[in-house]
Length: 285
Image (cartoon, helix red, strand yellow):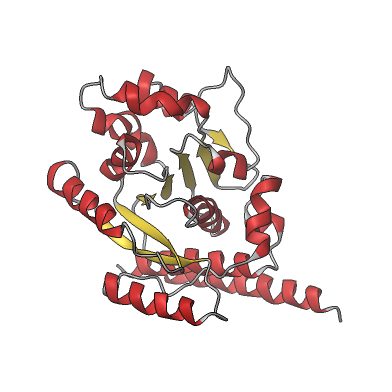
């Protein structure tokens, strides 16, 4: 028997068991809006947003991915290209266009996206002149978001108005952290921003947890950083760790989430486990 076939079969069985368990054991969950945020670049925010959203959709949860990054990597990572005449998140924020006129289906059942485009680059400057600029996303889309079981907000690597809008709209925030030497650098700024949003704009916002990404178990440094992260977040760390994986790096260039690119990969196993952990937590909360 071919080893890769056996691995595919085992992962397939794991997925079926996971979905059946959730079907029979879960409580009815309310709609959840989750921001994926960290002002550091290259920590796996978009990879986490795309593949967590896809993992939730695989569990037949109606899921919406919202791309708030002008680089539009979450959009292209699902194989979607926005032409010049197509509407995107920019029109929702600046022109208050209904999300009903913007969202797009993806090739993954149960998964839709509100795409981004290069036009979003100027949005932060334009938002400055808009009244209640921190509430632009919430005012335009929150009711639409509640049609979904899960809404995943992918944010740019900054703490500007786009991220503030995301945190103001979200129920909770997941913080991806790369397991490297400077992992905790700048996190105090992010957490301070979360506290300010809680105090002035969104008192119900909570830290869902940190998720460790690009983990290499062969390195002593990675294990030391893991210990530091678990101490820093005091129990607010997902048990699932996203291991460094070449297939995860390759998938975006093909416009596919890891589950469609290589479901036998370790990256697919990790993100399926992360989605499962989130769903189980929500079903018992």
